[in-house]
Length: 51
Image (cartoon, rainbow, N blue to C red):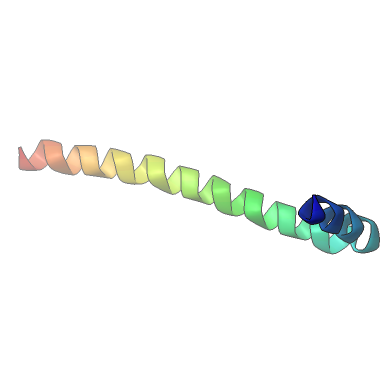
């Protein structure tokens, strides 16, 4: 409850910084997802070559 109140007050006082943080977290999650998919493909291809 305290955390929610602090987040709402932060959103009211500094909306630009809050949106920037949200965008940063979203972009990091997206990059992490893409990296996982690429690494999965590379590992599958590597194991196919090795086996």
